[in-house]
Amino acid sequence: MWAYAGRRLLLAIPTLLGASIIVFAMVHLAPGDPIAAVMPAESSQAEIEATKRAYGFDKPLPVQYLVWLGHVVQGDLGRSIATRRPVILDVRDSLVNSLVLALSSSALSFVLGIALGLLAAFRQGRALDKIASAVAIVGVSVPHYWAGIILIIVFSVQLNWLPAMGAADGGGPLEYLRHMALPTVALSLIPLGVITRVVRSAALDILNQEFVLALRAKGLAARRVFTHVVKNSAPQIFTVLGLQFGFQLGGSVLVEAVFSWPGTGYLLNLAIFQRDIPVLQGVILVLATFFVLLNLAVDLLQTLVDPRIARH
Amino acid sequence: MAIATALPHELEPVAGAPMSYWRTVAWRLAHDRMTLVAGSALALIVLSAVLAPWLAPYDPNAGSIRLRLAPVGAPAHILGTDEQGRDMLSRLLWGGRMTLVAALTPVLIGFVLGTGLGVLAGYVGGLTNTLVMRTMDIFYAFPAVLLAIAISGALGPGLPNTLISLSIVFVPRVVRVAESATVQVKGLEYIAAARASGAGVGAIMRHHLFANVLGPILVFASTQVSLSIILAAGLSFLGLGVTPPAAEWGLMLNTLRQSIYVNAVVPALPGLAIFVTSMAFNLLSDGLRDAMEIRA
Image (tube, rainbow over all chains, first blue to last red; front, side, top):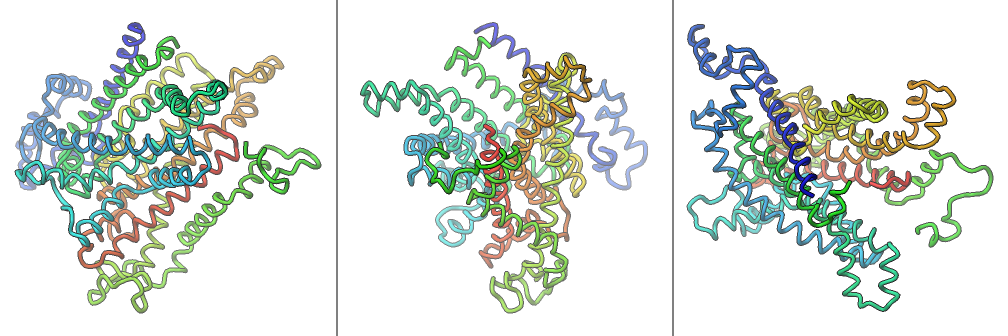
């Protein structure tokens, strides 16, 4: 167990380093000189050179990378080109909002998805199963940003029940919750589809095994059989939940853009619009790190749920 | 299970010579109602996109200030007009062309490059495998949406950049599937037999490996198309994909979204088009997976 945990932890380090190289390379992927884009048109050559030195762009790439990485591991993600504020502050503020949104939509999609998936497996072929299949296929096919717009059209424009934009800064917790409602639903659609699907097929796999037949044959109550099936499909369900939580944290850019929800996705969107590369890099690096660590945590917790995994 | 409960006329034909694998697959696809519905819908969408220049009643970029946001069913504009008075039907037809190109090309690139790299890594093994697979792992540090937006965000808007960033999303995914399928097939006895009979590495890969790993990879690639559609349209929705005034479903959704207070139906149409197309691809790939008897 501990040997496995240690090996898994070591494997995460090259992944994180690789991710940091990709994020670092983003500056140089950007067309044109990263400095020229932000300097006023009338700046002299000397001024441009000075700014280049200030940002460290005059040094060779590997040196630039190491210097940058050195700053990053100390929590210094540089300064925003647009606002001059340290990137880490912007990222920290927005990350809280994104986490809240990811948690609420995870709660919604996990509960509904697991319930629908299990019910569908136990009622295979019946109406409920068909409904679950429909939910699953719609969930995995729907462009969630469009679903968000539809929600706004129905609940904000037509019915005027819920606000369409922002997070109601200073409006109190109830206002915050009201602003959260629509983005939560929009963000939960894809995970709802995926989870329903995976839970259904995981439970069906177990249901079709002979030991379930044996349990039924010996006259075990349906409720107890259900417990057995849930326990045995838990590892698979657990994996998909972990992954989906990560996707909701890192993939909420489009939903946040639709609802102007002040999270990391909105910040990212703003950075792209202003071509503010340090902010772009900072947000993506922090989200990728979260994602890698989350996958690591899921893997490790999984060995607690199902110790057989560590032996492979 | 399905076969055991099927009525006699629904059973697969067994008389005569046994059908080849691919003919069996085609037969099953042709007899699955869901696949047929999804396939026909898709054929219609693709055909209308291909024939857009001839089908579109108006120039997709010609607007009229006096006819902005005409409702669905307006005279001369069946699907209404957008915020610049441009005919929605024409723009949806032309937009589908752009969206399909932007979504299908990266999956195709991912399929070709990913299969090549994955089969190579799986068959050669050793250091090559470690190098290729660890490199691919790095891309798994990002959720797909974030990776696409990160690269597009750095590269800037435009169709070529969308194709690049989405290809970077799909290549590593296909490599993983191709590699694991190859490792599985490699261990089978007939490969050992081919090697024992003196077949070279190239011949084994061409004749024995590809034929047997292509199925799972194809099914996997087909599941990625709907994701690619949502991502490609999503990038232009964020202003990172196709640039105005070109018609593209995601971009249309973005520019029309300001108008939902004036007209609630017309702005929803481009998204509906994305949804229907992505769902048709998903249903088709489900059918393909069942027909090829491949487990996800």
